[in-house]
Length: 176
Image 1: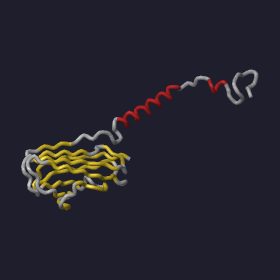
Image 2 (image 1 turned 120 degrees about the horizontal axis):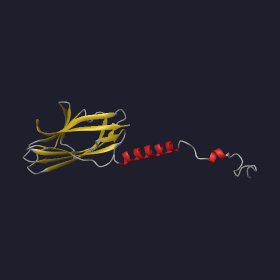
Image 3 (image 1 turned 90 degrees about the vertical axis):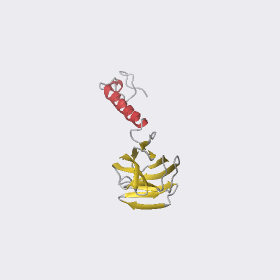
Image 4 (image 1 turned 90 degrees about the horizontal axis):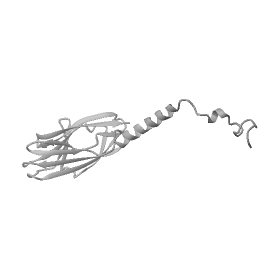
């Protein structure tokens, strides 16, 4: 079915429907905005991406913590802690601030510590003695719980018994 003899368009299509519209710039702004958001996501601004370790050096030991710095609520995450003893450590204790793990669920910690406790507002994990040059690698799997939003801060420290040897401040941004 074709339109009336005065128009080459089908019935119901007016020449104004196919004429170029003013305001094409709006379409380009929308495309550029979408491209900007997609590029930010690819660069890891909204979480994910490569994790760069936080390194803390001291005469007694080196502490490396690799954990996401930006993560979305509800996501699973992995934290890797690596301790290298530069001198003998009689009782290697890893201390994690309670504030850092607020509203998080810690699912696994491999290897398991011989003793676990809460001391001075921190979770402590006893891994026994470390000889000079020995490395202890710990893998922690967790999940961000729904109430956690905005950020969480704390620190992970290495103690020799009660004496702190080295510590690394940790800050994690939590997005919805």
